Image 1 (cartoon, rainbow, N blue to C red):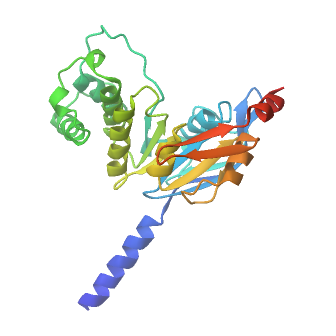
Image 2: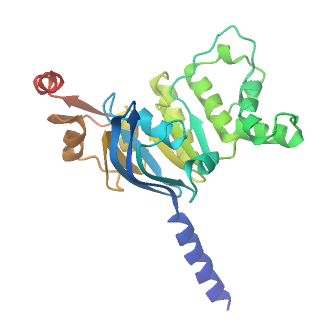
Image 3: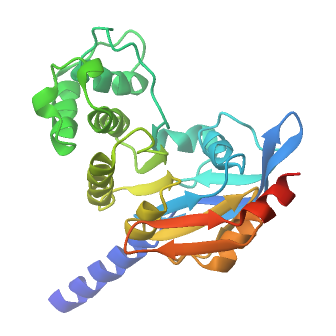
Length: 274
């Protein structure tokens, strides 16, 4: 009997980890009737860590906006946690590419993270002890609790990014969506952010857009290449064929340890853009 219960628990655990949290079918979307995303199909499993790369203008940010309900698709279907976007997006914590702020504005780390709780209450409700406890736990998780009283403008780029990740986490999401999370962070800070994301991935599904090939090849579990159309095979391997389909020109993969760099053929690139 005891053995049977253990087997059933293991089966339930495996099924839970294979559960689909995002399903995109035949998605077409864009601006002013001009398609930027064409026939996108994607199935994101629970606790996956997907890295999406692609050229500027290829639709990466547009895909994020569609998932957040900021752009209505022209065609296709999106389910988040089995619900439509307007309901399912409540399960998403979002960290934007860059957050410009007045460095002299007197707002503390604690107050920035607390802003993430606004969506979890009616406008007349006050913050309570549960909010304070959750904020403290999240700040400790991202190793920023000791700087909770520090003005956000006095932090380094990597520290500010940890605060913005904390602000997304206090919404208690099941999916974390990040747009170029280390774009304004130095290499040491970037490695620290990616290590944090790997730790968070034990409990969260993560979808990350990045131009950092080293991060894509070193930290994520699966990789997608997006240039209007999505090339995704549920694997972390980035093949030369995937990159050439995405960047639409010959690609040389140059690797001296890590990180990897992607260098397109300049002649071909000029011909393609002409």
